[in-house]
Image (cartoon, rainbow, N blue to C red; front, side, top):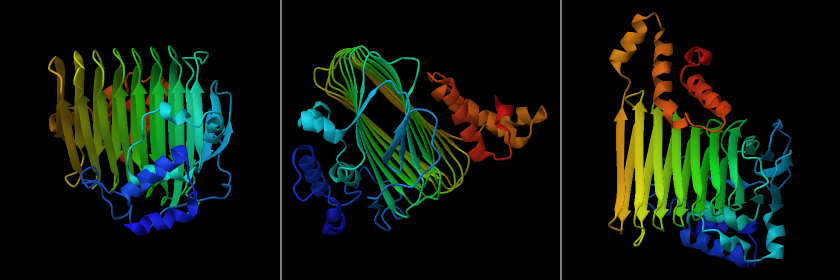
Length: 412
């Protein structure tokens, strides 16, 4: 176990203080990747742990620049357009207020998360005020070039949304080269009283890549958090969401679509913590699995003592396109209050042969018919996306990965 700590020692500060010291303590406690067998029990770990991932301390090579938003290449900030928000390095913020990070709830306590905090690389603070245009997305672009084999790409984001602000936030992850890298991302999001955040996450990684994303969201009184996540590509994509409903009237809605092919694996692990009364949460996750791929959903709802009038729901539905695909769903309810409404459900199924026959009898090709049914299965997850162009992008990704010979336009 000590080997993992020793491996990264040259990249760590010899005398960490404050936030960095706390992160180092978490790193030492976790000792090694996947140290908690329960939360990693369904993960295919052999490829992830076959060889260490090491950070790149040198400037990155150029990559195609996207036209909108803020751009990171292999974790390093490389440019920004007109974004309408305040962006600063964490070190600059801490120089004025060494305790600033304590405004946010702690990140998930796992090895790569603690390592990402400990390294002190690629750390950005984004402040969003009421002056932001609520109809124009704040776009965060993350491009992984795959320039280094077994490269660790750490990213740390602190996002602070002012009270009574409405914003569309997009974090867009793409792999443009070969795989073999690990994007290790910590996102801490604090939503002020009465604010509304629409959060769209797109993860389209290169084949063979790894992406572990830990997102902690604090939702204050009467604030709303609405999330949509689309995950495809990569050997492993793992999303760990923790949403803390910290004030009366706080609410959250989480939607996710996992699209897996080959031997890829997507995991969505969620914790919704109802800390206050009169809070609402909804979760709807779907998986579409082909070949020998795998999807994991581990959802936990906690209702604290005194959090009366809680209304919480959770749904995991999966569509198997192969007999070799695997789904593991683990819904959990922990309820310590008595005046609540909570329920969960999980289903696994296949395409309906009768529906396929009906479409085929109308002269529709088999791939197009299957594509129509699959798109219909996925559509309700993203039907209310606040940016319609992302609905089209997700639909194209779905069809292109499953049916390369089908024109996605035929299915609209």
